Image (tube, rainbow, N blue to C red):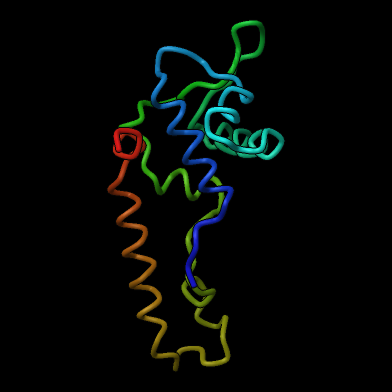
Length: 133
C-alpha cells in the first residue's frame, strides 16, 4: 500500500547526516560513505534538496553541502515533498473524477483522512527530532 521511496529514505538519511554536523560542510562523497548511499544516486537527491532550499552547497577546496536552515525549522513533510511531491495514497485524493466512481465513491473520504493524518504527522516532526533519535 503506502510506502516511502528509497529516494526519500536516502534524503532523510543525508539530511540527518548534515544536521549532526552544523558547523561544517560535508561533501557528497562523505555523506554517501557515512550513510551507505550510492554516490551517483545521492547527487540527484542533493540537487532536489538544494532546489527546495533545504540545503546549500559551496564549491571549492572547502566546499560541500550544509544545512540552509536550522534542523528544528525543517519538517519531515518538507523533505518528503521535496523528493517525491505531495503524498497521495490514491489518485482521487486530488481529483474526484480520477476514478470511475466519481462523487459516488464512499471510500474517498477515508483516503483523504489518511492523507491528512500522514501530512499532519510529518508536519509535526522536524529534522532535529529525527537527528536526535
